[in-house]
Image (tube, rainbow, N blue to C red; front, top):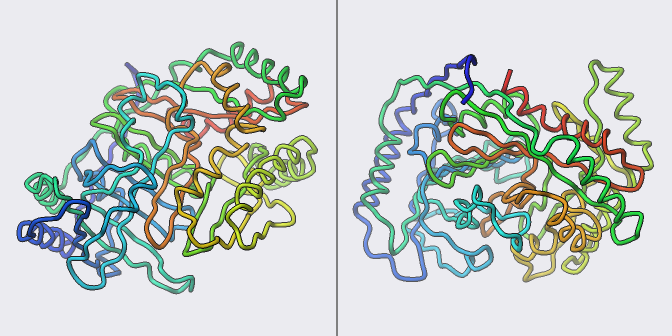
Length: 464
């Protein structure tokens, strides 16, 4: 347990009056709903007026009962999604066979929250067993803000919805809705974090990197992405929503996500990497690989960025990811466009090479197909991918669980799936953060250790 640490104070924001009224109206609609037939679910929805009644999603989520909360926001802020409870848990792909019954006019398609492990074939560590059944979930209560048009001036539509399945505990659903509608004005303590350990330490990391380099020199691998952990202890139970809010305040760019697997058990982060985004039949993916820290001033930052762009090692690592994404999408694409040169993706603590890839999909390609073809990329596994994943089972002394796996939101009309890096798992009063580095010919183990340290700075700052 952390001792002598400074606590931080945070206040629950109250819910706007009209939103609270709409929540209560949804509860009444649930009370009056008839039987839901097998193989289907009912979506009840209400639109929230823009302006002063637009809720703060994280503040709204903090009011909800802990244990089944989820959150996702894309880095362009065109999509924000918060949910409470589980209406249906299904296998990703099989979820699309369930029929949505619109209990009202102008009801949009339901959105499913997706969170898949990095390596499904690896035996789960005990710490990840609580997350085994959270792969694809239709939430019981959903708050969604989405910009439906590409026009910049378009006001995003915000909706509040509930999903009722044949076996839904309606009394519990109504109770959760009433709790979200209740007025609150309470304070919570956000415990400070103290660094406890760096996994097996730098010596173990160096041995793993040298082992990977041996495979590369032998020709069985071209790249391997090794990860390490850093554990923090807190002076009290951590609120995952509060931790995500503090991370997001420091890292303004990135996909934000949170998934709970019971009270005090959560996985969260702010990741720079998109796996795939789909709008209709247009899919967008990207290669994000090659890293430098941010500079202490504008000149240093520019020089570090230039060294990344001109680095032969980093460009080789980056090209491996482009080749894999291109080949994966080529099998389902009518056309494919790739940026001719990478751009710099600058984040709070690091900067990366990033290349965008856009595909027009052939009919019949599902979101589950896209994820299956693209995950994992060489950016989080290595190359060749299958060989790298097998090697990671030897070199990494821990199960990654959801770290570096696909996470996001999918619906009939589109999907946004990110890669869950720059992330951490919360277990009560402990936080375990993850970071990785791509190892290729020419990699220096000590430099790669320092690179992972830069990637862990987002969590390190929470401890100060």
